[in-house]
View (tube, rainbow, N blue to C red):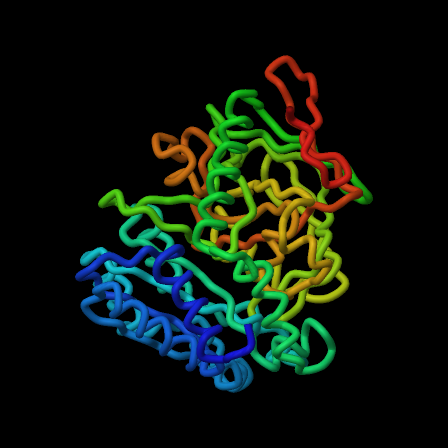
Length: 399
């Protein structure tokens, strides 16, 4: 796919018709970087083609954010402008569709005080977004867009065409009918989730280099794929691409140590060799060769930030994993291999009846980090304590 306009049009089609699944008459909120102008325009074009009422695009500038982190007073680092909050609240009230364009975003805070970088998050805005998602107020999705800066992060040179070619594969745009290919994949993932549900595992055991972690699952554990519905019953696929099945753990029941198997792009910085130790569900120790201070700032955001909110399984058949690339984008890297997240739980999607008293976690943050790979074995723990292999050498084991 060589024509730039044609390529952006195909990505926009996936965002509008497969990811967010925009309905006629809906307003659409698009969040993009200043590097994503072309993609944002194509998304607007496609949204209007399917009958959208109004498309509202808001751009951010990573370099302006660096200026903010370096120069703002400390009490202004986490400021949430009221108009941003009102925009999201209004979208939630009206049941709008939300589309976020992702384009990497590592390195623009290199050399900045990591403590200040960790504090520079709009907590009030994030809380409103998280609550809107919890009540399933809107249909939403995230989709990648290649940029020269992102290509340089991945390949060491700004070869944006090479990055587009990799994204075409992971987005299934190399298939004769990408929409049909995605529907087939959604069906496969939903079948996998149901298979896990039939086993009624009460926990998971992760074992690998530096990792020995036991995670208690919610009661009952319920696995799903990233196939959601908003409060009006409108389906949507929050991540494009997606290769995971996931569930909500019991926040009180995580014990042991886990080592992240891929770098984590977080708040414009890069976290390498992340190692977390849990006791009685809570993160008690943190280390990393780079970025530990940014992680600590996230964990100190609120009481729930130090507890797990999600565990997700991805096997070696992931098209993203098969590229052999680290994308330095959580959207892609979390769908290349198994991951988990500290912070907000996803009980609203996986187990709507579960509350905080049942072990569901509440937080304003939700930070995914990668924990899988060929050297990490994941087993399901049965009610009697026995263990059943789920992933061995990145291969799915459940028949």
